[in-house]
Image 1 (cartoon, rainbow, N blue to C red):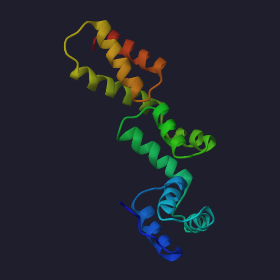
Image 2: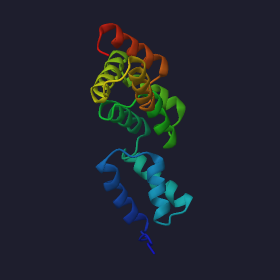
Image 3: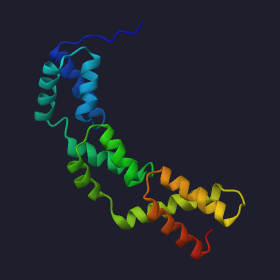
Length: 161
């Protein structure tokens, strides 16, 4: 049976500095790691406060990093990004503020890009089936359905479908 190693305050702080330096982390990820190591909520709070004072943990910086990465690298839409941030315990006000990082023109361009990429993978089918498959795909990536259908209809008008 797997039993995680127990660390004292100093060791845990040192390991978490490395953990946070590797990539942006949120409070919840650090708290989960501390619980895994057997820390109670009081000691976890002390470690988290210390890391915040050292600017190793910053929820705003984390939210912006996640938004940028998920949008630019993975092509996620706003709905899926918001769900991912909420799952990590990021507060709604911070999510709404950080979502302003996504430029609307870039967002629409990314949507059309993923639709065209998916269109290349679709076999010759009727126009209606292609539209449905494209819409289902884009909505599953977290894009708003109204925007998806508008982009699909625009692509159809351009003759890309």
